[in-house]
Length: 216
Image (cartoon, rainbow, N blue to C red; front, side, top):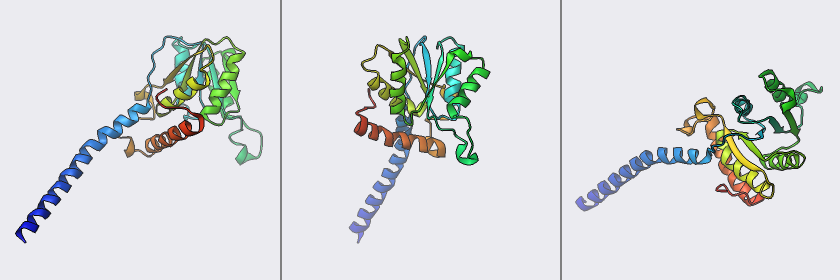
């Protein structure tokens, strides 16, 4: 019995140590993964800032900031073309893109420098739409503006779609201290948890469906 008891004590101690080690290492590893999703790319100026759909306004805010700092010559707003209130009212209403365009103009961006290119329903479709728009423009460089956790997949997607275009693709997001997304202890916040998990799933889907690899 003494030997058996000692074995149980050893196994129990090992289990406790293992749980403690996992707990200590899990948080840094999870933080590191969330930070890996975030791409930072320095650039001085691009011809236009492409605002991807979604983001609850902070993507547009980031693009307006680029324009005000003379780091973007104009703003192109991408996204779906469906009115976002029609489902409730049964009447015609603004698209999300048109609402963003009006906000940008109200914030000081000249109307002539804000362009709507709507119809895309996904990041991949937005990249295709932007590529088609670039064919009739003189863009030599673009800043793809999105949310922090979305930057890695967005960069890989746009780089693949624009691979044969003579257009330099950069990625930009609102600084973390001003963003609603925070990579530190993201699993403690529902919105960040959903964003990280969604990106994880979509990274796999984009690799399988579109051949878009996150390290591109």
